[in-house]
Length: 380
Image (tube, rainbow, N blue to C red):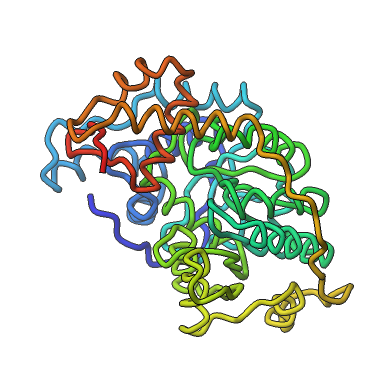
């Protein structure tokens, strides 16, 4: 049951009955069924009921014994959790599903959403960059997001620390979309809880992951393809040579989207990825005017001249960020070269599970801890 691209970029007919919506989710959540396998089965069998019914046979042909599809109880629990959270399902082919994703071979069959879905019909530009952003980088992100928003573009990003956070905050009043690596009801990182609530109220949050899922490192690259797929262009503000932002840029190129980058000093590691992108042909960005000019054939005309960075006082470090740093230190102190189970580690931390889990993911992404093949945590 290996994923293979489905041949058509045309949207499938969405489920029209409650029974079909239920089977749609059960098929999607079944083991070893990714987006492309989902659409292949749907194309081959013509209906969601037939596609779901054939799962055990397909699994047997692939050498998978005792295969069990997603149960009714698991699917029902997800729908109930979504209803309690106020999330709306966007089914591939449905009226509110983002048309920008239709040409992706691995488009999500289902997106959970909360907020203003009309933003999906407008011009969208992704702003991404370093979690460990410099003050100049965050000022640049704020300026770009504010000016592009004033020119009728919706800002798309991933709610991460640093550049993502700065971009979302600046675009709240003009329109912003946050794509989660976790379930739509799980805010990551925790210190962006209030920002996420503001985006729910004024913008839109999206996720293809199951309700209640906490993120692991593998979920971030999967999420990034949606950020780039939704957008007509991806602007990288700050990024190291090996970073998730460059994965987003590569996704954008594969998807036929424009890639633009803000240059930086040659010896600044946070700018090395951007400089590499520019060397390889990405459009150099000095201001929002450069982005608008690059997209001029298909974008609305600019309303104002380029923005200029204004001197601002650096914001005080929030208490939640200090708390997170302390928690990271505690985790590093407890994880040595001898692997430890994650649940044991979280119990020892005496911290709320969702906060401790987020901190573990932070350190995993940063390369400071890693997982063994058996799922235990060890220090790099």
